[in-house]
Amino acid sequence: MRPTSSLRLRGLLLSARGGTFLSESWLQALSTKCPRLRKLYLLHTDLRGLTGCHLLPPSLQMLELSSCELPLELCQKERKLCSPSGTKIETLVLNNVPSFTDHHLQSLNSWERLSRLELRDTFRVTANGLRSCAAKDGACGVEGLSRLKFLEIGINGRQGYQLQMASLGLGAGWLGLEELSLGGREVGPGLLCASRLKDLKRLCLWACTLSEMQIVRSCRLLRGLRQLEFVDVVFQSRQSSSVLGYRLCPQSALD
Image (cartoon, rainbow, N blue to C red; front, side):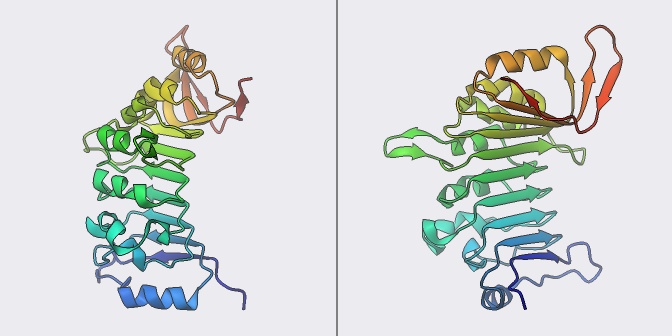
């Protein structure tokens, strides 16, 4: 039998029975049975009973959480529970995880291999939280999420939440960040700050409405940009109020 390298699990958050199934003993068994597990996808899973990320399989390189519940301690105690090199996770994807806060975000500074972070509908992440994690020069070298190369921020889901405009935190700059993806209500604020990203080479804008002037201004300020991509973007004509819809537009080279 071929060793399992990826695993998808659906939890009980939307089940009539409720309850949890990801116990500490279950995760320990998973690490033993699947020693080469690289990718773990969790949907509708209650993780509030876990005490730390050290319980995840040590071989894990990608973790994706969709519509899950997190405990406040899941990442906050990371430094106490395992060494910075203890997690090999390189990619973290959060999709509609309202319990993910600035505190969780800041604790990711101890994930030394994290190079890709996707935040979709994480309503409690603020501009201050993002700003505090940005890679920047410090007294002891580069501080923050210093290995991050790809960042996605998008709010496109449920209504009723206060818009945090977390992408305004990009105004502090971010050393080494080469790819940025902005979606929904984070596109406008993010474009205002993208010029501060000196290492940015690729930009993706999705699920939004844009004017010609917004695109022109952004391209003029992003001197190092090599690739601009539009996904599910509606372009508003400057000459009239008509709206031009383009779906999955091809990538556009700017050089």
